[in-house]
Length: 222
Ligand code: PGA
Image (cartoon, rainbow, N blue to C red):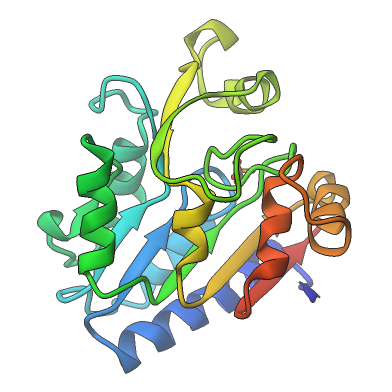
């Protein structure tokens, strides 16, 4: 179930092939997109392929509760790494917003997500669904775990600057996607990836819920 690739370049280009094929087959594709360091190579690949994003609609998995203009906000990240480098319409790029029921309705009314790309946190989170999150969870405000704050402090001047809260899609929201790709880069992710994909399906390991989905692929490189 875990596809092991030879390099980060191969991880990025393999997932870019899947996204490219999806957009070519269905120009009106609806995507769920991640942030973090893992998808940076994927976004570079996609930009270089000069795809037509005119009809594509995106939903981001999560956002920090912080000033959206801050360079480390996920809105800034997506603009810098993907949106400003493609012909996607800004109005087609959605981030979790209040009221959360309206955000969820937007996903549902889009006729469903064709492809959801995920990363995995070192504690097994997907999006910001930290260990203990309900498998039925929907979009909501969450407190980030100490582990996540520590992991993400590398993007900020100090650990005190890392936002403590976020809005995240729920595990229930993510699981309604028609197809899910999980990307993991680096040896430090291998253990949690194995636990999530081959261990017990439990809310203590949020990514383990993916074992219950019938169209999931996992790509890993060390
Ligand atoms: P990373 O984050 O890509 O920066 O390792 C993954 C995640 O926390 O989902």
